[in-house]
Image (cartoon, rainbow, N blue to C red):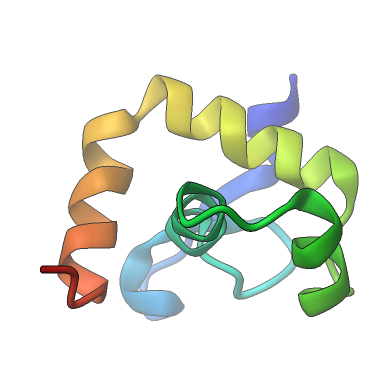
Length: 79
């Protein structure tokens, strides 16, 4: 299952859910998409992630919406 690519490691990105072999938090990817960014832009901006990683991030978000929404709120200064 794709969500197995997501890991939380104490001391890495404040323990946030990240793409397993990177330090790219799921909330960053989800927030970027919510602002209108495309998968192509994400793959260009983060060359260490793959289309499967983006799918895993979306699946994780679908199963952990509150956690990721709270991380977005805590890490951004939206008005």
